[in-house]
Amino acid sequence: MQFFWKYIDDLMGKGLSISVILELLFYVSASLIPLALPLAILLSSIMTLGNLAEHNELTALKSSGLSLYKILRPLTGIVIIIAICTFYFANYVIPVANLKWHSLIWDIQQTKISSLLTPGAYSNELDGYAIKIDEGTDDTFKGILIHDHTDPMIIKSVRAESGNVYKSETGKYLFFDLVNGTVVEELSKQNPHFLPNGEIHGTPNTRPARRSSFDQATYKIDLAGFDLNRSDEDIFKDKHEMLNVFQIQYTLDSIQKNAEEIIDNFLLKLKEKHPYFTSVNYDSNVKKVNEDPALVAELIDTLIVFKNLSVGEKISAINVAQTQLRNKNQNLQSQGDFLNTMQKDQQRYLIEFHRKFALTFAIIILFFVGAPLGAIVRKGGFGAPVVIAALLFMVYFVLITIGDGLAKSGTISPFLGMWMASIILAPIAFWLMRSAANDSPVFNKEAWLKFFRLKKR
Image (cartoon, helix red, strand yellow):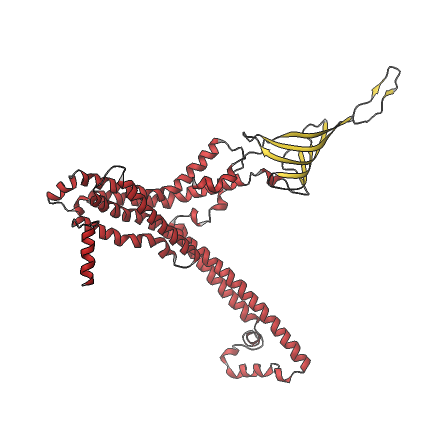
């Protein structure tokens, strides 16, 4: 539903086949599995342990000498296997699914009919037609001129003051709803017609034509050959969402090396343009001048001293120096902006890198939150467990959303942003496990009041 809400404008009115829609939803659904799986683990763990506790089966197991840790050992093993499978799914399947649906939605966005028409210029995108509009936005235009060359025997021109453009439901035709216009049709040149006496009847090489006007009309254009074009998926492969952890690690190393090379080259160019380094380090007549202080002093003495210049020369020198400083400041600003962009790009890759591990670990954490909670509340079925799981998952979702936003803005590190939910929920899981294993009254009001009284003393 969130996907449809976001991309509904791109999907409507394109005449897309049901197979394309189903393919798009299939790829999008694959990317949502790791987000839905933690909720499934949380709900199932609460329901399972809640059923065991509600029917006193958990009490029977504990009375036989089994602790809660031993009771949960088989389930823990299964959850760990699910978590590992989830990591492999997130690492190898989801990048491919993201690549597929991003590529497909891009192709769908590019099939917007209004993008074919550019105000003030003829459009020849549709075979057999030359279409020109004077002005307009979206699907409403003014000053529409259509030259129809689909029939080689007829030259047809349609002109209208205004109109709307839309696509048929099947996507096979393009319709123009035209208002206040004319239609001019010219046939091809006619061969001369000879009378029995050998004379030519009529005027030779003429073009019979007709002209008609209308207040409102609909003009249909066949869109055969203008179906959805699938672009090359390789152009989307470099995005962070389409890479696994090994590819992300390789990309991060490449970005770091490129940043270091850019900084070194920038510093080298600054030194090359500086007068001191130009005269000292790059004097072709003096070898190893830096190793001899006397030669350095001699070169410095040969430089022009500012105080010996005239007033006009000083003003000119100051203007030149100011210009050079402004240029250097602009270069430094541009270089800093470029490096900041590279750093933000690097953070996005790090966010995606930690997301795959944090999401996998969250499954284990939520299991250890849900399992003891089900043993404590002693409720199974789809009543209280669903409510509790929904509230807990809401907290988890808010935490990962806040962490993701803070990490993308650069407020906190990508590691902390992606692991924030697990870091906060881990102590809660540990406390619930201890309480459930020791049969502590977690939701007992009197126990909490007694606890705070002891704290005050």
